[in-house]
Image (cartoon, rainbow, N blue to C red; front, side, top):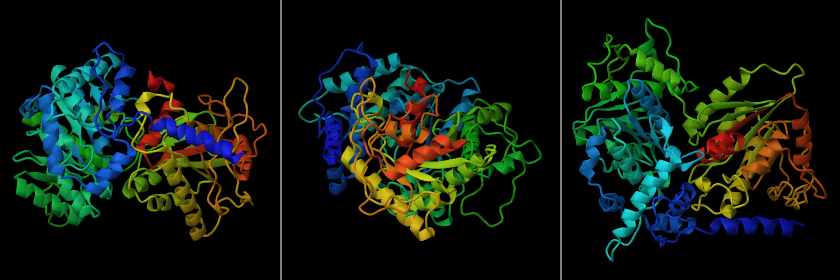
Length: 590
């Protein structure tokens, strides 16, 4: 029985591995009329597969050479770096909150009647979300048009010296530049991918203004293992004479940003807190929930105001008297001003899926937040506890809390999981970011940078860590649930009406766990178990048939079926949140 389940998983893993590349793309050029899915499948061939990524980590190529290679790809696509000067770019970096700050900024400036371009990453459901015009993802037709335009040009310019194609993110960055130039946007908001100094977006020469959101520890294998090293990388987007703004930072990383700004010749300012903009007036309403969004909104106000002033669109809102800081700052404070009506409306109307998002689906309420650093998980916990408390308690008190978690890359998952303990989850579910076991799902969410086997191993390690953290904290969170007495194997796929198989569970750790936790190999199975047929957007879990489920799964299913309310926090990875959104809201795939 266990062997049959393992064979099913290995077959799925083998299927996922097909299509990844070891090095160069050999796919022939395609006609621009090819449809969207053809474009996405070809784009996926530019993903760097897991083994090649590991080789790159070991060899650690010169990042400056990588940036120079990006310039070469841009030129082969038909653009010069100086062509990008006309995009009137707002360039934003940071560890957490940079996407939200970009979303606030774009929405504010769109409210002035400007045609906006917005480049961000990662996407949640469809790749075209990364390139937006006036807040809307590029249409499938336009995406296909520009994809094949750029792809064919790069194919045609291959020679013995330049035989390669740009990798996935580089290609999309080049494509975004083509889109924004040909669609004649008034401005482009550019979110940095990773870091700043050597990120491929940093080939731009003259942005109008730059921004830095909150700094923390992330991507340590690329950016360094201290917040000071990371701050140095982030400050690499500063340009001579171009004003830059940062949210308040801890003392040492702020000093690094100050030194980078002085070295480059960039005027740098610290954004006052949003409270300063509300003095003597009504509180500003934000479209994004959570107290941590207030610093992102304050950054957006400064970026939007500076852009408007530097491009000559208006003299700028009236400046308020400066609030003197309690101590002499190492970086001057930016001015406080009266936000215009368009700014106030823009902050209120901002939408940014997958960040502090609540989806009420009948008895099940989903709380989605792509937090994946210690500081962002802390903010997520504050938001979730407040949001869950704001819901009316069931009269009989039968409320169940579930954590759905995954983390990718080199992140310290033990540190992240420890921060989630105060939420007092009744169950923890660990799952890779794959929506289905089958490889025939949406090409938009195919990911060759990690194997299913490695992803499942990571989930099992997270499950063991969760159990250990609960033991250290003082025992089991839910004393009414008996721990399993024996270790179960994979559930044998059982025949279902209309075909298919029963939910697959991955075997738990080598020893019995004190905590009620489960590992599923894909999101569709995990969501079906959590919802137990009580979310109208999800199918009910299959009947057990002849399979013998783990005790936690069977006893938990009964409690989930009988609970008056189920609150589910989905966090740890934006890719995880994207997969969940795809299953909970199929309209996002249209």
